[in-house]
Each structure stands twice: as structure tokens, then as C-alpha cells.
Image 1 (tube, rainbow, N blue to C red):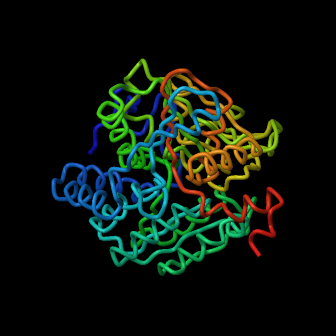
Image 2: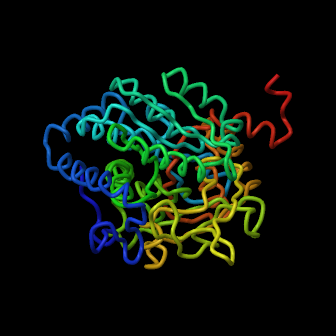
Length: 401
């Protein structure tokens, strides 16, 4: 369960080259040390690993299949395009992999109160789901803007028993939700476990997120060999904070023949504040306790972002992605709102599979860059949560009446 490719491992604990680290107030350091020790102990514990493996199978529904999107590939003039179907996991996205792993870890550490942040709502739903299963208290911080965009997921979280707290500061999106969750954690550090949903934040969170999401690529690699008879030529995944992309790349990093492509949110343009393409347009800085690429102005202030996709609307990225960019192992690109919406419609109407707007960005890049070889795209979530956004953005509000 814990293996990871050596070429993407941190050279020292908590570092990916110059990136990562723990840039946090001293008040948080004891909790991070406790978390790191608890995480290491859990990984070495056979009963923890057995319970995690069992739940991933019986509760999450793993392994998720790979699927040949032949009509989609034909429509875009590409070679074979296969989808890793994380949209078929329980709760409808890859976020449940990490939530189950960290939920079990919190329970093992004796933490009964769980806090989380969410942008698109899928991590919030996954955390609320796991807390309901384990009988844990759950508080989810969510930006006011995202609560409007993802009203269905807000209701789902509340149905599951979670308290959803609206964040009205700043841009009222994911960045601000993370900041509020950190403030809560500092105040309630003895009783509370902060279940971060991506591979961002101070050490050990980026490693924890990668460990629990690497199941995506471990399965995909085995499935490619067994079902197709070869490895893919390209693996493509969307990148916001970066959890599904790290999970999608981890088992392929040491396969030099496999091109890895991360697709960020190009939003409505290249100007600062009009996109969330951190690796393409940002520069190294500190955000939420880690050194990585950050979207910032000339004074070092964190910039506002924009994306049609709430889950990609974040001005930072996980530090391992920063390392993979600088090393050249992963190619990071961006796709705009309109192209992502076109890809949403194209997959929906060619395959009867409605993607979330996050992986629609990856599909849009594949559409614009057809390849004669085999492309594997991680379909990180399903599009039910984005129906309102798609309808209003496309001028189809009457369909919601």
C-alpha cells in the first residue's frame, strides 16, 4: 500500500527537492509531529493496512475500471483513449480514497472531531461520508462562492450529518476555506484532526495524500498491462491542488516511455486573476505551510483566481508537482473554461459519461492534442455536481426549471 516511485520521493523527509517543508506557527508543530508519527506507525501496522484495503474494496468499490472511450477518440481523431473511472468510486470522485485513509488514521490516533476544507464539494462529501461511517464529528469549511456553485454537494454534506461553515473572507473560494480550517485546527488542536483533501499543506500532508491516492495509478498500471497488453503512451490528469494527478502519476513516474501531462485551469485568460494555472504562470513561494509554486503579484501577495471548475480554483499546488515540473518529468499545461465546457459536452454525448468539470480540462487538452498512441485519462469525478454551473454558463437555465 505504501510503495512510491523513488524518482518522485523527497530526498529528505518532507522535501521534494527545494519544495515542501513546514512553514507554520510553532503552535501547529506538535500536531504535525504527532500526525507524522501516527502516519508512520499506521503504515507499519498490518491491521491498519488490512482494514484500509478491505474498505477500499467493499466500501469505496475499488478497483475502479478502465474504459475504452472509442467514440470519443473517433470524434477527436485520436488513437485509443482510455478512462480511469474514478467517477465510479463511492461518492463520485477520487477524494474518497484519501478520506477513508485519513479517517482511519484519525480514529487510530483517538481524534473524534474532524475538520476539512472543500472547493468543489467532493472532498467535503467524502469526509462527511467517512465520518458518518466511523461515527466522528465533522465540520467542513467552504467558500461562500463555492457553496453557491456547488449547492447540491452542500446539501449532501448536511444530509450526512456534517456542519458546513461558510467562509466569506477573501475570494470566498478554496484558498480561504483552507485558511479558516487551519485557524480552527490551531484553536482545537488537541481534539481535532484536520483532514486535508489534496497534496498541499505542510509536511506530512503532501506525502499522506500521495500515499492514499497512489492506488489510482497502481491499479491503472496493472489494468493497462492486463486489459490492453501494454502501458499507455500518455497519462493525463487535471491539476488543482494536485491529489488526483499525483495519484495518477505515482506508479508511472519510473516508466520513461510514459509521458505524464498535468492540465491546469486556464480560466478566461492569461492575466493574473483570470486563471488558476499555478505551475504555468506562478513562481515559487509559501502558501498554507509549504514551499511550492504560487500565483502571486509583484509584491508577493497571493493572487485571486478564476475557473469554471470550483475544484481547480486554487492559487497554489502540491510541492511534489513543483518538483516534477522543475525536473521535467511531468509536462504541465492549461485549458480555458470554454474548451473544458466543450469537452464536458463531447464526452457526455459521445460516451454517455458525464465528467466533472475538473477532468473535463484534461479531456479538452487530449481533444486539442490527439495522439496516435494510447492515452489514459483519469476521470477524477462525475459531473452531477456541476449541472447548475454548466447550465448557467451555457445559457441553459431553463433546463433547471
